[in-house]
Image (tube, rainbow, N blue to C red; front, side, top):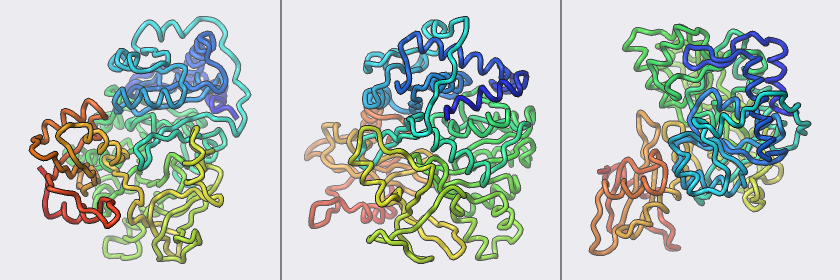
Length: 512
């Protein structure tokens, strides 16, 4: 099934219903949304883009982000959304690896990306994009099959090399049905707000709200601003959005300053990082039971577990003194209806309730595999199970509590940061002899990046110098927030850096 079918269906059923909003301003109804996507589809076809071709999107949130994705799917091409926070060098690697024929970007990235990539670069702020919007008929929906490639989502691994997660229409459909069954019942009166990056979970959630003909709202800022969200809630009502824990903490602080109790907000789905028990209780004290939590990965998008609105309500009613309800509130919930979750031991056999092991999942939302990487696919999908690399335990009722991540990924503000990428960037500085990057718990961000650095003999470098160097290699959000200067890194007898010891020592040493 072609993912663009849901937009075409909505345009036929509700052509005059407001569809796209820039802030509180409606910029297109469903007929106009579908027509603009169809026009762009015609332009892409004329530009030589066809079924199976990859088309990337490297830009911040905007209404035409949705238009471009729908146009890509309409002709059977593959959307390759790229985090707008990445460095142009990182985006260029993804363009090369995916073989993208064309990439949509903005004025801020176009020139640098064009100098680095072989793909055709189209600046959405310039005349090249306007030229891709011809007048006249637009192509019919391509007959996309359930197992075809639709969304190529790039996520990094512990090696630091991004991997392309292949998502099919069947995967996306399973995600949609799981959301509607378990997370929230999207309704026509809702306003779906894209405050988190559309290249990730926020963009995936477009489908649920297309199906019911709801409003799609991109904040005028293009991102997340607490006061802007609260203002939009008053003006538009029934806001629904995805947010990382960091965003929720900021929103609650802003709401408390304004004596706002969440008026106009219907549902906040949170995920993408650990939510501390104290923080979700604080959020519910301010906003009540407007929350649902999901746990997922790009490899099985947004569809592993859910902590429902009802579970939040039960915990709120029971109070902090109720041990069982507090345990459940601190968990990531139970398996979504379309997903099977298990905790496996080293022998790949299921562990009983209460025992800690690797979280594994299987079901129709599980990815097709990694793009052009059969070895990584085989290492991740074993015996029909997707091995998440996360460590956790199930209780007797099926609530999953995450304890650690076997992969050393750092989740800061809901965004994955992979230590190897930062280490490789720092090691290109001539003064750096050794480096190991770890995460430090942080009340606002969940975790922040800390680099443990050993300098070359006689060399000098300070945090400012290494920060400047990082900014030439990797995205700004990945650079360390602190540095620890060491004479040597602790290592095992086999020469492996002991990150566990570094994490323990760091709590004492501190950062500069």
